[in-house]
Each structure stands twice: as C-alpha cells, then as structure tokens.
Image: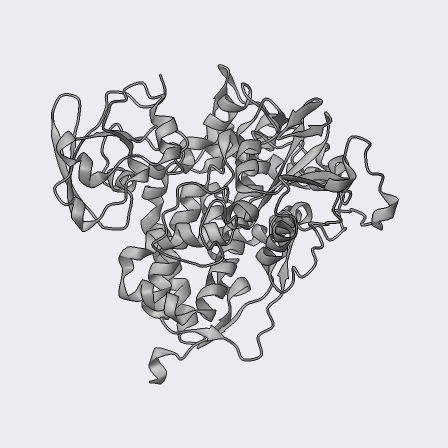
Length: 108
Length: 412
C-alpha cells in the first residue's frame, strides 16, 4: 500500500491509497482522479494516462521504458519527468509519491 | 465454417515467394497442437530461427510473421497492411465485414470511438463489484463438489454471463452465438461465412429494433442510439458493430482462463506464490497473458511492396501469431518460464496499434478477480488423475476439457 498525491493544474491535491502491485493508472481510475483517461486500458498505446512525477520522486519512480519513451516524446504536455501512469507499478517504496496531472491528455 | 485442407502439393506457390521461405504449416491443424498449442507454434519459430517471415500454402496461402518485432511492426503499419480481410482462408475472410475491425484509418477511429467508452477502465471499474459477486457465487457452488470440468462449468460461464449482461441479452442465447463465433475461429465445416453473417444479422435485428424503441443502459442500446458523423447510426452499421462485439467478447476470456488454470493446476508452487503474496496477482495476470496468448490475427497487404526485406504482393495475407511475440526469446529472457515478477513492457496478446482489443481491461480484470477469489476458496487443486488434456489450434487456441479436483473444505 502506498499513499499517492495527485495534484491538478490549479494545485489542488487528492491523496489516495493504492495497493501495491497495481499500476498508478489503475489506482487513479479507482479513486476517480480527474484527468486520467487511460483509453487503451493500460497497454502503453494511447498516452492518455500521462502524469508528471514530482522531480523529488523521479529517482525512485525511475525512467520510462523504451516503448513508453517513444510515446512521451510526442506528448502535448510532456516534460522531463513525464511517465505514463499505466507503466508505473505501485509498491510500498512509493509511499508518499507526488505526481502532477497535466491540463490535457494525448499527443501534440 | 467450411474450409478445405487439400494436400499441400495441390496449392500453387506464388511466383514472388522464394522457395526458401516456404513451409507447410496449417494453423487450423498444427502438428502437436493437441499436446501443447503454444509449443506447437514455438517449435515453428525454433525450426526457422533466422527467418522473419515464412510462407505457407495452407488455407489459400499466407505469410507468417515469425518474431515479436515483425508482429509488432505488422500491427503498427496500417499503410502497408489493411484490415479489410483479417480471416483466412482469404476467400471466406473477404465475405466477412465487422466494424470497426475491417476498417482502416481514418475511417476506423470514429467507429471505434463508439465502443471505447463502454470498455474503458472507468466503465469496467463500475462493473467490478458485480463481476466479483457473480464469480464468488459460481466458485462457492463448485467448491463443495470437490471438482469440476473447468471449461464448461466455469470458464464458459463467467465471461459469457458478464458479457451477456453488458449487452443485456438472454444468457440462454449465448450457446448459439458462441457456436457461430466458433465457426469462424475454429471451423467445423457446418456453416459458410455468408451463413454465419446472416445468422448474426437475423439474431440481432429484433434486438436492434427493440433497443432503438426503448433504450436501456446496456451496450447494444448505447450503440444503436449513437451518432456517426453527426447522423444516427444506421441498422447495417449497428449490426456490423454488434457482430464484432459479440465475436470479441464471447470466448476469448474463457479460452485464456482454460490455459491459466491448467498451468496453476500443474504448478502448485506458483499458486502458493500468489496465495503468500497477493501483491503479485496483477503482475501475474500480465505474465500469464504473455506466456499464453491465444489469438492469431491477420492483415492483408495493400499493394506490392518490400516488407522486412521480403517482396510481397498486394492481396497477400499475413498471419501474426501472438504466441510468437510472447514466446520470442529476443523479446523476453527464458520465455517459456513464468515469472510473476517479470517486467512486461509490451506484448501482442491483445494485438497492437489502432485495432488493439478494446476489451483488454475487462479481460484482465476478469482474470485477476478469478485468481483472487478462486485461490481464496480453492487454494489446493490438481488435474483429475485420468484427465486427458487436449488443445486445439486455429485463429483462437483453446483447451477443450479441464477436469480439476480438490478436497472440499467441509470434508476436513
């Protein structure tokens, strides 16, 4: 279990508990986090579950995998700490994680 | 569906196909498929380690994408390949229209968008408590009996009941719908493609009419009341879309569950891992789907081209056996081994690209819930001592029968 904070564009925070083993995307959907769409259902193929990891957490979350990097390169609201939340597996080590939900999802 | 399996010599090898790439391989009747569907495919890859593409004259002739990389590229490349025909033999596939599957971009997107919201993670999340409740009742009924034939008594019931509930059709009808679907995926020769298409259309017609008149909150109502390009969807489009939805949702989860439970019945140590550490379950679902893909998808070459160094002719069919992606050692180390902690970045189990299975999140949710709830109630189970395991190939692979046994809790 990990406590994860999702910050929206206006800085409003939602803190939710997500069971370890699931993806960050699944946790966001289950907790009804606005702005996470996940159209492809977690296949790393639609780029609509994009989050920007708080820079202080990037080292623990780790970099995107190669397939994910390709998608991130095309994102409209991408940044140096972009991850697709369906590719981030929640673990106890991520307890306290803070991510930012971008103002829009999908490709530029 | 009728199709002939004539001796290979009777099939002409097209002139553009190099002899070195020809192999005699019938996906509807693979050597050793009964013993192990996945290894039957894998052995073809092992026999031809250097080939990216092979050609078989069987089923009117088609290419076979042999490696994960080739399968991935074929799925992704909608400029080289069209979805207009996605079934072999091609003469039968040409007669089959199912939306949005037989459409290419840019026509594909707007039609696909009609079904996506009903199968999105958000939509499935709303269904999850109901699915869980239903499958618990199914498991509890079986538990006290100390055994079951898993395919007929569980795998064929759970996903189909969930699916018939989504489309709000009577559960009793599932049997005939499945029969028609199987005639496409695992033909027995009783119906032609035209007869199958007509059967689906005749079955759906009164339902489409009824749901238009009085829409409910089911998937059929959602589709028949939707708009395409600003106009209400017409009957032909709705029929075609619903035929595809029925075809996709009826037996794929059932067949996958068969392979998953066979593996767990044979491997108590893996069951124990999931019992000891339930955190592994979501990852285990993805790993099992990597190891046991069931579908072989097809595309048709649009026009004469070079693809991965091979000359192809417009109209050629190409097979993408998703097994050969999941079991490719160039994609995954030690691919036959199951490792619930394996990092899985991409597989082709649900296809890839714009046609990727829209029901994948529902399928994964169902499999996860089965693992969670079955193992809580029936942690120890094994194959019946006289169990005969027989698998079947085709465009969708399956386990025909799975006799499981366990000691009921009341018996202790």
